[in-house]
Image (tube, rainbow, N blue to C red; front, side):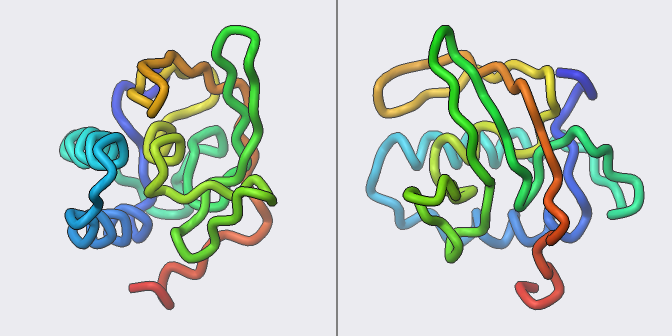
Length: 138
């Protein structure tokens, strides 16, 4: 990992912790495993104020490109209510979303997906001009 641990913006961290606290009802085993792993990674996350956040770290509304072997995909990481698979908007609660949150461009992530364990290489991270209004969500 480029920064040694997950990197999260302070308000996004609080929102994510709250979100994870209410997701224990998921019946899908892969989703439960992914969210439990993310929750565990949050215990050692490095928390920054908004102004200190590195531009290459994946956060809410980041556009992300990941690659695994010859397969590559690009998506935007969003809050659950904004997910839209057709528009490549992946929820933080989806296995792919929880796999990459807080990682940086150039990092590799090993994660369990429905079709097995994969190593994902994060090849690009772009921040959107419209970050989420976290104050509304909190």
